[in-house]
Length: 306
Image (cartoon, rainbow, N blue to C red; front, side, top):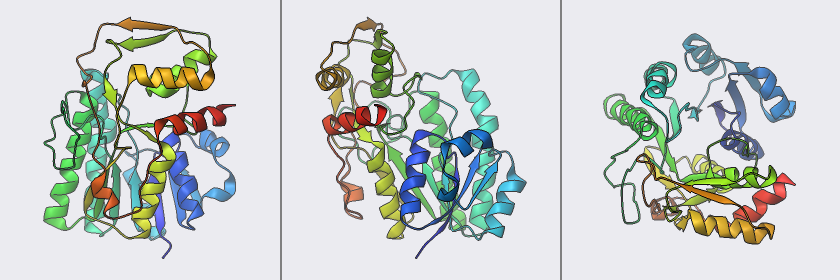
């Protein structure tokens, strides 16, 4: 059955991939964006049912949209932080994202509407040496992961006390189609951006930190399948299940581009964990989820840039 879905934060690259995947499954999509002019450029007018300008603090607008359009699912993609964010950034996040999200969750729980929350498999677990399952203790070591944990905890609390239906998704290091290559976030995208601008790549530490890189189309496809199968009240890692060091990823990019990239190694940051590889067996019990290898993902990413 087709769903009426409100997507909050639809102009990021993950959001755009999700929109295109869900519209292909004939869902009715409603988008809430901060800048409607940007979104009108970003999306073809026939890809959504309605697009509205606002943010999480516009609670009256959001509630009106949900009730008038009989929304079945709200997908929450909004975050203003990155792993290196400061305490001042975090305090701003509390006001603009966390507390308004709490208000939204209360409304959804009172109306039995499902929340799909995009958390962070890369930061919410903290320092873990082995493959990470959804049962691992949550011990984030940066404000980005901590803010995600706060919202996760509130979702689980409202599920226990008010039966709020939910899906919590913990993607690892997402990269791929539509990702900006001129920002500071996303190692693969940053490397490609530096290469195209003839700049050097900065690596914090010796480049041996290991991450689980997952193509954004695998993430959006996984979400679509979970919605189709009406899976709810579950928490899933969405990664590739494989780890690559920064140096290994750099070599893959160089081999794909057939060009050498200049690297500057800097002192390691305390906000970075040494290793992060997600165990994805749990989600495979519910859907057909077979994420591609990073070599193919990088090749596809580069092809979309040309």
